Picture 1: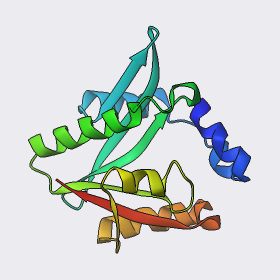
Picture 2: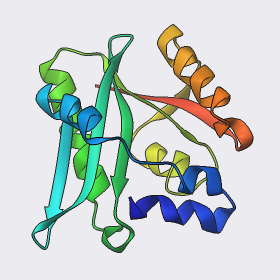
Picture 3: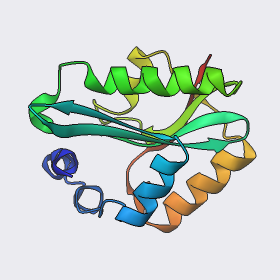
Picture 4: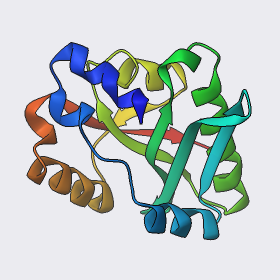
Length: 146
């Protein structure tokens, strides 16, 4: 999605060039009720995908087209995921993110997330991320209590 292009300006071409999930993977999230899309101007402009990891709703991906940033669409998607997680009686929201990218770590802190020591499931996710080369930039695990 176009949202990844912003990472190129930071020299994070690996992240910017990451291919989006395929239709079958996205359909699995939709069919399981773990995907939300925000529309504007009669087209999708953002989405959020959630997994369940260690009793929390884990934000696998949240993305908003660059021209729609600043409209609080990402915040609305995170709030939808939080509402879903409460309905599922999950303890919180988690995610992994880049600590120093303004629309990552600092942004999630503004939404009430705090850095945490990885739980076993988050540690596995971080290990997979490291194997994919994503640790070339400082990353961390975050959690927001519900």
